[in-house]
Image (tube, rainbow, N blue to C red; front, top):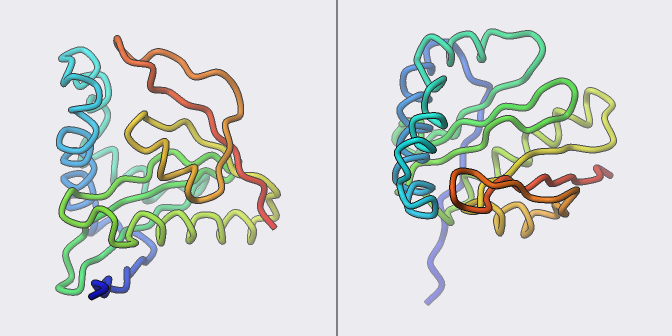
Length: 163
């Protein structure tokens, strides 16, 4: 029997979401991405350094980007994503409990729609090794050489032409 996936609710982030978005992103980095990077202390501390509630408030308020949250059926923030007006996806993270349930895809699609509204033809991003297959499944193609992130090859430049 096919499991029915919950419909992912994505909305524009507000400053009231800053704390929950910060927690969701930090959990995603540590719990989902961390194992792929061997939980290397330097990698994790660098990755998490700017993931503070104050920064999330600033990122959400900024006029040079668009931020969204994914919200569960019971109203919990389970993901956060952000795209710059230049068309660069700066973040797209979900908590472990909602992996493969459409939340990441819904946030990514919402950001792509925003890029189209801004008149952009292409979206770019740098992916972790963890999210590489996710972006490939969603039509992104490698757009340069990957770089090392700690001792792991894990900074993959991707691009997607918008239609």
